Image 1 (cartoon, rainbow, N blue to C red):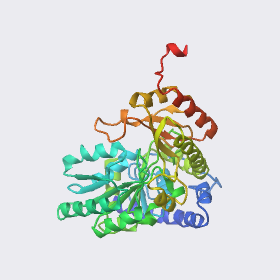
Image 2: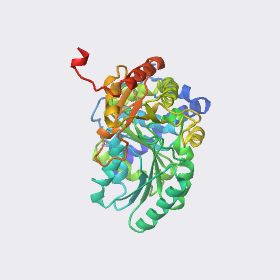
Image 3: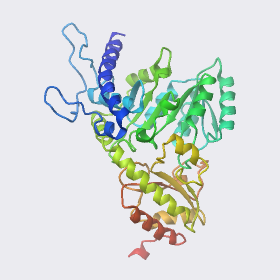
Image 4: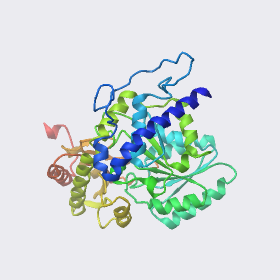
Length: 423
């Protein structure tokens, strides 16, 4: 008990100093806050960028205490702590916990609600659906899927789930907006009101959005999830995840206390080097997101008019059913992710990916390079994702190069790629 309490107290003390400094910058301008993220000047050396603390263990005091705040890297490490306090400030939260991947962060939430009920979108990252329906189903977790973009349906589903688990376990409502991969938009503030009325906890996966665009805690979320692997890391060279909690979640009996315990004792933490890379990625996030958003808007507008494209999913388009909510919630910045459905069936969509030259065929998202993925082929057999859908992570290349690449490949959608044809 002494170990945990001592580390916890010092963690709060350190975070308060960093949070005050960053929050002053955020109030002025998010771009400025990001440019300075994690960069308190070192009082001893004058260094303006943070060091990497690779130590796995730390010396105890002569009286066997831990006045300096660290004992073992699984519990706390200075570099990981700096990342946690920085993310807390950027999202306007109370505390944060960093994990080895976004999936590990999601698992920590689900571990904290055994016997509970989770209401999740019908269009969601398939890894979360699989985790809830397999590993944690055996822990007694019940699951309901609903179209979260339809507030009436979401309200009914949340009320039903609350009645089902009352007296048996916690209620968690999971929002992913825009959703992966069909970019459905959920009104976070409206769903937060319903969730809290029913005694639930609202978790918002904001990986696609980033704090540069929106802070879900200000809209009523209790916990914000990021896969740090994606936009925040930003260079396809690290894995990590985090959970940022608002005051309600860290209060006495709040869900984040269980999550913090899980982080410390389950051990799925992020390495100090990956934490340092993530801090470095944060400092260019504003500049990168501005280009991701701008490029995605141009690509989406092009695809919407293409004769070989049946449908474009991008909330920045006026034709998108969630455009008005997204414009308000995302402050007119619609992100760098989109998907579209190719005319001609599954094979035509796969043919398009084969003929692309600038886009790389790979999973993940949020790096400097543009990626294309046929989502249905990587998801389970019962996926709701259309077989003709291609997901695009729009990078930092020239938008003209991206558009020309897509135009050429779409013109060859009925031509299967063959090595012989490319000799």
